[in-house]
Length: 345
Image (cartoon, rainbow, N blue to C red; front, side, top):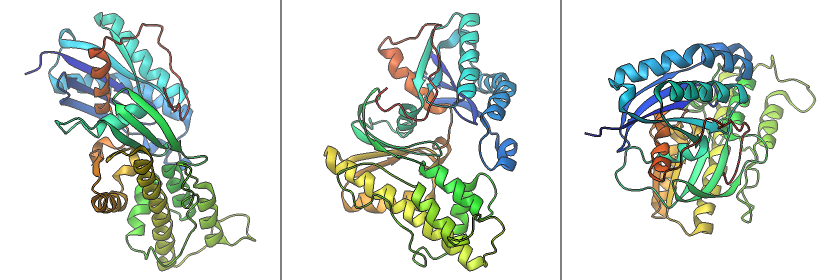
């Protein structure tokens, strides 16, 4: 059994998470505290509320992960923390906790890229390397494609030019009067509808020169379908249950068609035969099934993160072991780098 362990901290958005991972990449324990109840009435994540919730939960979450792992600070090799991209206040809380513990326990600190970690999470359950691959992150904040030659070496291929796929799911869910978080609720409603009943646009799907996505226009098309072009607001518009379900199904189908088409195009352009998919939207069953079908037809190896490791978590902090093996540690001057996308960092 491995004698060294890694303590990984994740606080990039609205999930406070910690995991203990051994040197072989096995997740010994993990703890995630969600904030859905805090953001529900706003139908979206409020950065200030998220930061305050992290501040209240970060130490209890770390304590729980350590206690469940039965690991002592003396057995830790380093402390890993996601430092970019993400919400400024949320990132600062995680980094401050990591620095404090690193000082108290005399341990090195390793800053990791949240997006690279999502891709790395696809291989947490596999003994074989998932690299090289096309890495595809689909979440509330990101819809991005990368060529990944190894865990730390990647090139940005393309991504959304406006809304992320998960963001579009959440906003359309609000239009349909669904509870927060909107993505899972919309997907559940879509199961009751006919995805062919309403044909929504598929932005950029015919553009084979670009690996970019655009969901803002699709979101607007849904709004017009609900309220009409003459009404300034969709709020209060009454829909019968069948139309409501058909709108959800048609919207979801349009998003999935765009995601699948561009990911397959990325494989063709890079001449790679492995696709690794992570991020919250990767937990969507219809999306997973469609990807599996299309990849099987093309003899492409598809690796999707386990559902519990699609959404933000600290287990994907196992990426830090790759930096540790290369001697890539950070000093206590390490700072956060907020934002949504930093393509080639």
